[in-house]
Image (tube, rainbow, N blue to C red; front, side, top):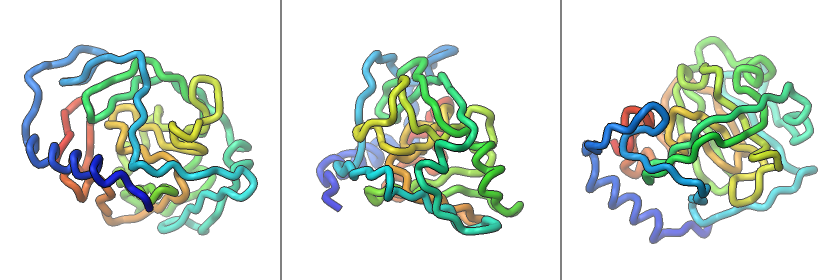
Length: 211
């Protein structure tokens, strides 16, 4: 896939060195423990930035759902739109306040795709080969969003076009960029970083950085 192997190896090394270590800094009401506030929006990925063709792109929805589907971009845009302003925290110790997103609230998306009652995890799959796992209870919060706009503009390539999952209380790696598939399942499937030393949950407010 053309991954940035040196970047991935460096992050694996950091995970092994800092496993179980937590910062003494306690943060505050807006800033999770160990985070610094930034005005910038750094771009972190695996070194692969897929193309996006609006006419050909499809979001596959499968697993424990009433009906497997492949949704076109226009299908996503046709769902009820929700605006969200939320802070965004990265495991690499920065937080950006009041990021403005627009997209489909996950609670509304679930009504459309109708997963079965016994689903417990959502596995996100990206066009760059990335995957990550999130438990159902984290996704049922009101502020979880499938975002297609950032700061009033369609998601750009560097920020994960055309669709990414935003889960504000979790570190950014738990919401995949370049989404191409969502799998509803009753079994956990640790993803790209979770199998390389990162925490399986990733709550920014609990400093769940490394496993």
